[in-house]
Image (cartoon, rainbow, N blue to C red):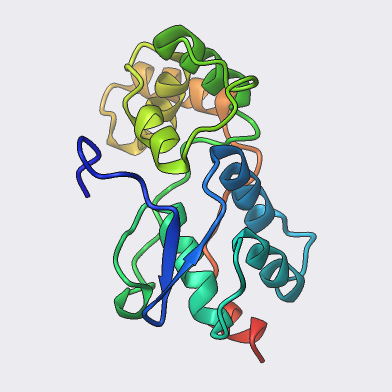
Length: 187
């Protein structure tokens, strides 16, 4: 998709049929928080995730959940063909823990108040988030969290990086559901 002339999608496709979904960035941050909530059992979580469908829930619940996951990750491919066994990248930010940094970066760089903006499409939010300059606090945190200290030869620099990483480490690491967990939801 080319965002310069194509509109952001408002639907997902499940088994060849389009379904209207929620698209506001706030709803997708809530989606991520729900997926990350270890206190909600997966069967209940699956039922709650289906609330992101606006005009009816697809019959194929498993494909419906995968379609939402594809929308979340901005993957426009039809979910029937996806390889969901790809390794999950290391989490380097948290919408909960880094909320203040994200909010201030959007105010500083784009003059967007994320509290008062009436609507922003999830894909627009993600595109702007990715485009934040390296000098913003959130981008610096992402950079430090992504460094593997073992790759740093200089002992003092490695200690400095490790100290920064401890100070900004994420409290809980996000993980992707395994195929077995997804299968258990539908058993």
